[in-house]
Image 1 (tube, rainbow, N blue to C red):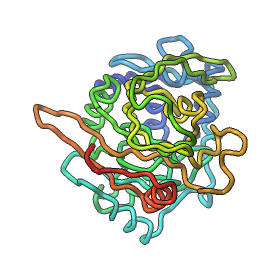
Image 2: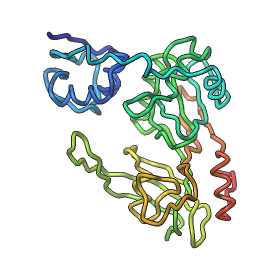
Image 3: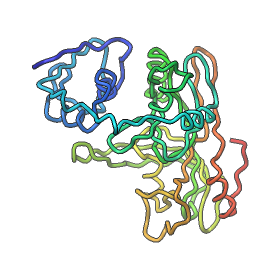
Image 4: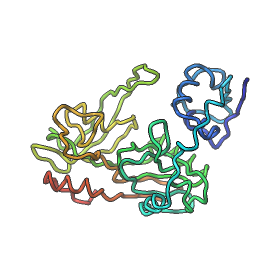
Length: 305
């Protein structure tokens, strides 16, 4: 059985796995990866990776895909309570006709996946703000990272914002509390990071502008502006330099995380971009647990970035 689709202009530049999730609403990411790897889903007759960007008029074919495998048990589907919806609505920084900006809590995923149920897309799809329509996720933010996050209200805005992120025209500033004293107070980190896709190592160049805002012999408060957008880029870079972020359970050194804090001390603090000549700038206040660790470690943060 073969089923074919032609990519609409609105999806130009979108990752193929995200496009598939738009077409087949309940397909798990794991099944997308497997189907692409085995050639059950092909782009213009060729195998591609899940991160491949599609273009207008591309042809995507589904071959003998068992759609019965896509069924998810209803009892496992995440349905947010009214309290959860209202508490997340209170985190909104800006709500306009085209998108919302909020100060995301740590521990909440951006969208559902094989390992996470509670997620912002499902939460806000039940919010009156989106009129019971599914929000468009336009960029990534790790589950355990707090701070500025955006969701589009319509496909056109989603397309525009996704393009801005892809073209690196959205400027992001992160704050982190890391172990140890960073040697230099400012500079640029340029190194190669390795990730695995289909069990194969992929090496990518990563670049981040950084500035130490305060430090002592125990830890440092650092401001980071990523130029590239690699997965776990900031966490991997600090870990590689021997200065892992407090609360990072994945990238940590021995004896550096003895119960000091369960939260990842990485916060998306500010985001800036321009649309049609209009400048947008949003700042997300620091979480209480972040401010508490700053106090415990006697680090000063002057809110003047």
